[in-house]
Length: 283
Image (cartoon, rainbow, N blue to C red; front, top):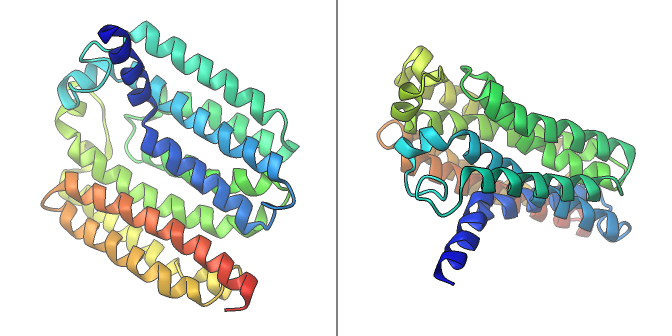
């Protein structure tokens, strides 16, 4: 019984529940910004569930391919510590992928197309792009940003979510570069050529900072494009400050820095919701 509990716990860990919830929320926000949550509740539910399943599957397949790197960088993860076998992780990810595709088939054509592209990208990232300087970071950034597009497409109007997708992608590029700095020892051991390995850790952090500042400067755009009310500006300010603080801290402590960047992204998601609500009520 103890072994079974440990395996179930390991499978749950493979999905990265926090990431699953975060991506699902972003999909919901995309639908919310597009104004289709109340009109298309079944489609929104299917899109949110499909996102969660796909992200869980992608994280599981990532751990399958990264199992040797994780023995160095993250030995407490499910596969290195023996809670889940590599084959078990692979089968689990396939089951989740199949379930995600089944739900996506119930959605409009554009949403289905985004889902198909993303499923291919999730696998391609780990197998082909993760170790390429900048390209792997850009692909992950697209995947995060596309959750907004997926939610909006599920209710038939993708354009209101485009700006949000771009801003989310910018923030994600920053965090992914910082994560690569954090993991540089294991990545170098495995022969990966990530951005910090290719150009140096400090230079990679400077690139990340420049990208983040560009995103911060662009953050008021949803208000000026009239996607959100003025409340958005007040709520997004703390998110921006947290992300900038995380970037500064990353130069001394990449681990805590990228954690702050993640919190800042969550706060930004709250700002998106508050902005839409404010617009609905004319605030």
